[in-house]
Image 1 (cartoon, one colour):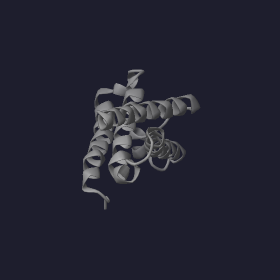
Image 2 (cartoon, one colour):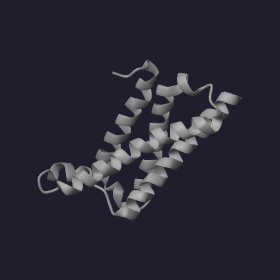
Image 3 (cartoon, rainbow, N blue to C red):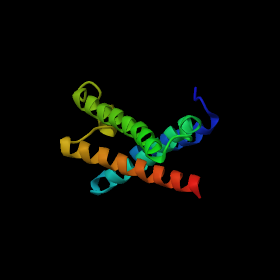
Length: 136
């Protein structure tokens, strides 16, 4: 169960993004568009950072901005790394789970690193917005 009720909203947005992104891309072939995957990772980074911020807001508000940024981006990037591991695992088990591989598979090392950079960019954007909002 989520520790804070306010974490429910970013969690639900995250689930909607994942399910919507996977099924919409499969239906309309959106992953054929070169930048679509990176857009999904930027949005995922934003939502993961939002989720981390909602969970940790009470604990980190007294910290300096750079520490808050480091913590929130680390949470989002950890979620991104877990996602990339799951993509890799689906590639390893593609013969046993072709249904999973159809909807959830990764690319090569260059794609993985690009995805993590996009996750980080989304997390930094959300963190910058939250810190600006907090100080204005």
